[in-house]
Image (cartoon, rainbow, N blue to C red; front, side, top):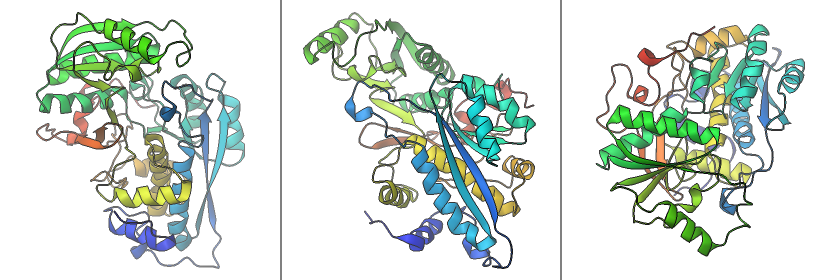
Length: 408
């Protein structure tokens, strides 16, 4: 493994490893010091509160997402100085159930015309039309709801985070390639658990998997870590997974973090666990090192002191998309930026083996999905053999013939 390379040299290594290097430094002349520098202000609006997880190892870092955006700001500025552009980031936090409108208005008052949003679907929708009327572009890095790309889609909201359907399809493709077609579905009792369970059911139908049984795990409001010891948990999960029909894989849909972490190694029969526990699909993995990923990992580790998570990569990609578009259009006009990002000329490199583009019908970023466990990347979807007339990446998630989106 290579070690971190400091400063500009690191960026040059990074550029040599990506087909769509930020700003294409080699093609850009040095900026004219007599010209006025254009400041491109990017807002970051996040809904945040300390979150209790079943495992202490799963507690998210305080700067999750923001750290990725800050690294991208540095990358943009390394390029931007050649064309008299300067990028800044304004970070605002609200509570998970708070009204997002006032905080959004405050960012706009500061001059931010691009907003990276790590919000719930409800909060995102509350600001989407306001942003459209004010000429502001939103980059969704947090909400995985398919509805935001479908019946609730907006022409000014670009989606970096993959959808639940993309994650479920990526996992289903891998399971089918491995010839593990028979699944039992365990899901939680909260809304987000039901939504991911729906995505898994859809993936089963789409790729030929068979869900042979389903069980819902009711959240009784316990104190999670403190109410049950290891022995009780072992007994509870074992009994819960007893008397299931023959199956290859136990699928878990527990986004609300109530029981999923406890399922692996505690089931009645010895079966692979996948979904939100065990083998998981995600947009990034902290152990990913292919396609130049080791350079990104080392730069991020040197800058932040920790490993890069999926939300960090999504935020990095969002800020880099703005940087790439402003460089290519040589300006800071959100309308031109929006048109360029939606055009055939736009792509962004994100260490996933190919250039990433946005689906024109719902503004979702096409991207490979990594399938892995806590230690390593096991595979990347789309899997070999899943073909598509436009892009194999469109085998993940809702395709254009299925879409309900009417951009407005």
